[in-house]
Image 1 (tube, rainbow, N blue to C red):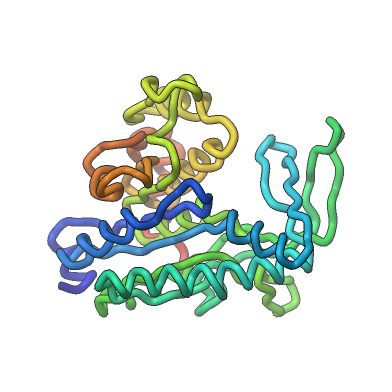
Image 2: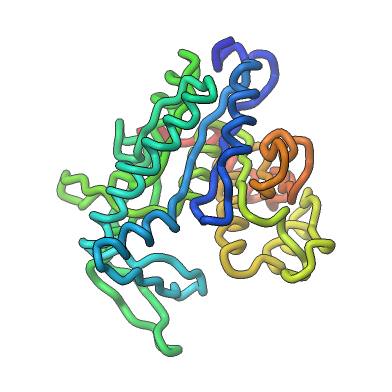
Length: 304
């Protein structure tokens, strides 16, 4: 069954974000995506690769550098050397290996970077605001970008032909003079952009079972957010790396996604379990009315 046939049967496309941390095992997701694809569900896989990038930097003798943004989010500072290693690790090694793993499981997977076909594009940010020793500073020479456009037509065409895109950063960074440079982009937010552009459900797989009211107590998992107040509770509870995932969840919903689930990658059948409610599910109704209005106007997202 093609992607178009799956959607006509009332099932939205699913975007699955597979984490790049060492603690996140992609094996369960691979089997689940194979099951979903075999049953006619359209799936797009987006993956990170922080651990592999750091290992590549170490082999090259480059020290990974993480900085805190003015908004309190920690991310990688990507200078020219780091960007070269990032492209090698993500598009060169990890995307190829993960695509092969999906194909070994019977999935007709196509590996792509965000640069290919202008899948993920937006302005390059060469200067970033950071906080160092409690002081705000400007760091220059960064190779990162903000995704402003998704080539949804390319993805929809691949899905309609029965393929499963396996996508990773880098993205296509617009230098402002017509030149395009591969630049770093957060994989959670890349998955959010894709889910919004396709009007898809988004499953963010990680190494915990969802967002916890008490970050140290899995028994305090917040199962669902269906109202703005409940989403505010989720956002207040999210700390550290989880803050980025909750930010990505909001961005996906604002872009046109129907729902987002943050769930454990290391359980049995993690994607199917997440779609069945195992995790923290954030519904589109959790956006306030203004955000819902904006999202409705951009249903399906931008196309490059």
